Structure formats: structure tokens, C-alpha cells
Amino acid sequence: MMALSRWKVIAVLAATIFSILFTLPNVLPAQTRAVLPGFLQKTVNLGLDLQGGVYLLLEVDTAALRNERVINTVEDVRTTLRNERILFTDLGQVQGVVTVRITDPGEVERAAKALRQTVAVPSPATGQPAITVSAQPDQRLRLTFSEQAMEAEARDAVSQSIEIIRRRIDELGTREPSITRQGANRIVIQAPGESDPQRLRDVIGRTAKLSFHMVDVTADPAAAVSGRVPPGSQVLLDDNGQPIVVRRRALVSGEMLTDAYPTFDEFGRPAVGFRFDSQGARRFGDATRQNVGKPFAIVLDDKVVSAPVIQTPILTGSGQITGSFSQQEVNDLVLLLDAGALPAPLKVEAQQTVGAELGADAVEAGKISTAIGFVAILIFMVLAYGLLFGGISVIALLINGLLIIAAMSAIGATLTLPGIAGLILTLAVAVDANVLIYERMRDEMRSGRSVLAAMDAGFARAMTTILDANITTLLAALIMFALGSGAVKGFAVTLSIGVVTSVFTAVYVTQVLLALWFRSARPKSLPIVQEP
Image (cartoon, rainbow, N blue to C red; front, side, top):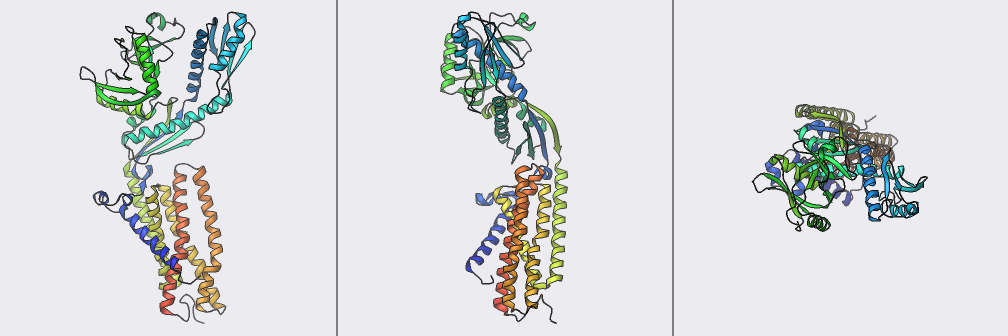
């Protein structure tokens, strides 16, 4: 164990150089870091509790998602039966179950077959049909949703929401946001450094569901508002609060957009330009060609932002969304459309704004605590094992601390207040391995073994205990990281890195330094063993 192997020396030197290079950017000013190579510009990211920012707890409205799924199914049934020229009545839904009555008894089976082929298709989430079509008395067909498929779609909606929220926050320029799932349908967002919580809420929480519908010119808006809405239509409000009756089925949806960008309309007012993909351009071109002279509505989050009349077919696959937008509203709308629409509305369950002053106080307290702990360990080790052995342990401890900061900088980890606690705890227990090794050396010397044999046995026989203690700690940290969230994860990250670096420095750094001392001094006894 005490042989001065070349690979051990190289490993210790490499670790020391790595720790210095990747720790140094954390204390350099931003202007100096800017001239360094890209891989050396990384620093430890401070969490929400250290640099301030915004905390949001959001809930995905899966009930609204389910309701929309049912409403869309009603429209799908209407379209399918009309395309098949099958007469029907009493189409609607009650408590999430869609029912329809087929007028001709001889058409019931054909209607059921058509609906199974177009509406009751396998769900992408489960691979099984999400809807069961069954025949009921009185020529009725009943469409029942699979609970398993609906739950799978809800889970997918939460996952999609997390990804869309991440894209939206990245566009805002927020550095290292933390976006995690909590429970079945909740999302926790921590945006360090964000100073405008209201804008963050507006950008994150807006569904940004864009669609294009034909206006139902045959309907009377006033009558529709009072409840007489034609089948297949719905009443929406425009920017001025006026009702407009539009066809429920969309001509083109926002999922077919490939690009959105800020622009200006013909009067020089801020507007949003957009482009469709090939499928959207074809559908939009066909719809405008077939409805020249008729108005169509551009709907954003169930609100009509514009309802122009189609003057000529729009075959280019691009267009503009105009309205009473400010430039900031245009920029935010472009951001939302580019990031994609949320699959379901989000509800803000909790919001907290953490001031930067509190974080600065926490950082300062962490620095003081770490310094006090380091000095206390230095005094203890020197008093217990002398200046040489105690000093070597302190050098290993210093390299250990630098390695933790360097590793966190290299992987872009976020340091939180519990992370500081994990750092202090790691440094406090890191010398345990040195204590085990030194005490074993003392026992071996007292039993009459030579200096070299005692040193070798100290490392060899203490290694099992060191590994056992640290592996169990590492497993606990990994479990906390996998199952915990927020502060628990921050603690687990620092602790996991600290366990690995502590074993390396306490064993290999100490071993190399002691081997160098033994080779140069050739001692007859160990300073940590008192002469009888």
C-alpha cells in the first residue's frame, strides 16, 4: 500500500490541478472569466435560497384536459356520422360518457363500426383503444372512456407541460431553473435570479393554444349568448368583449406552426407573423380557397384575437395575427407560440419571492461556518497527531474542499442552503478516514511492527471500514436524490460528490504525501506514537 506507484502520483497531481482550475473561476470577476476557455468559464450555480428568485407551485388542470377530450370526441362523432351519411339525433355527453341515437335501426352496426375505426383508435400512451363503443337499447351508441387511457394521457400532459415550461423559461434567459414534478399533477418551479414574478407567471401559465376556425355566419350571436348555439358551433368573445359564433372544429391548429416572429401590420402596428408546416399550409390553403368572402377567426386561448374576411386564397402557408398588441405582448406571444401550447391549463397553487439579501446572508454565514469548521478540524488534527501527520490530513482536507467545488462547477450543479450544510458535514467527517488510518498505525507500531509495515497496515486494514462507511453514506445520498426534491436534492448532490472526493483525498492524497515523507526522512518511528 505504501509503494509510491506512478499512477497514484499522477492521479493526485491531476486531481489537484483539476480542483484548482475549476474552482478558480468562482472567485474571478466576470470580465476575467470571459477570456478563459469555454470549459473553464463554468461556476457553481447558486440556488433560489442563495441568490433570490421566484418559487412557483403549479397544478396541471387534468380535469379540463379530460373535459376537452370529451368535447372533441362529440365533434369527432358528429363529423364521422355526417361523412358516412348516417342520420342521428341526441348527440351529447353526460358525466364524461358520449351517447348518440342512430335514426335508422339498420344503420346502428355500420355506425358503430365507423366510430371504432375513426374515434376509438388506440391511445398512444397505452396502445389500447381509449374509447369503447357499445350498442344500447333504442338504437343508441355509448362511447365510454378507458380510465387507464385517461390517466396515461394526464401523466403525459404533465410531462409535456414540464418540457414546454422549460422551453419558455429558457427563452426568458433565466439561468439554471429547477423544474420538477411533484406528485401526480403538480410542477415545482424555482427560477433563481428572476426579479419579475408576475411576468414569469404570465409566460408560464398561459396555455397559448392557437387555432383557426370558420365564423358561423348563419348564427345570431345574441341568440347564441342566450343559449341557442347551433350544433357544432361555440360562442367566443373578441378583444372588445363582443360575442362571435365560430365552428367548434378547427381548420388548422397551432401544432402545425413551424415559426412565429414579431412583425408589423400594414398600419405599422405590432403584429405576430407565422408559418405553417406543409400539412398546415395545405389545409389552410384549401380552407381559404373554399371560403373566399367569408370571415374566419384566429382564436388564442378561447379568445378571438382577429376575425378577418378571406379576400383571396392564402396558399403561401404564412400569415399575420393582428390586434391591439403592444410590442412586449407581441414578443411574449412569439415566445409562447415557438415554445408550444400547454396541453392543459395550469393553476398557481403557491408563489414565493425570495429576496437576494436573504441569500447573500446565507452565503456569508456558510462561508463563516466553513472557515470555523476548517480551523477547528486543523487544531484537532494537529493536537491529536502532530504537525506532520495532522498537517498532511489538513492538506488532504483542503484539496477535498476544492475538488467538491470544482466538480460542482464542472457538472453545472446548483448549490443550495442545504447544499452548504452538506459541504460542511462532508468536510467535518472527511478526516474520519485519516483518524482510522492513524489509529491503526499506532496499534501496529505498539505491537512491534516496523514503521513501513505499520504504515502499510494502517492503510490496508482501515480501507474496509472506510469503504463500508462511505458506501452506505453514498447509497443514502443517492436515495435522497432519487426520491427527494428541492432542498433534499441539493443536500444529496453535495453529499454524494463529497463522499467520493473524501475517500480519494483521505486515502490517496494522504498516502502519496506520507510515502514522500518516508522516502526522504527514513524514520525509525512514527511521530504519532509516543516513546515508552
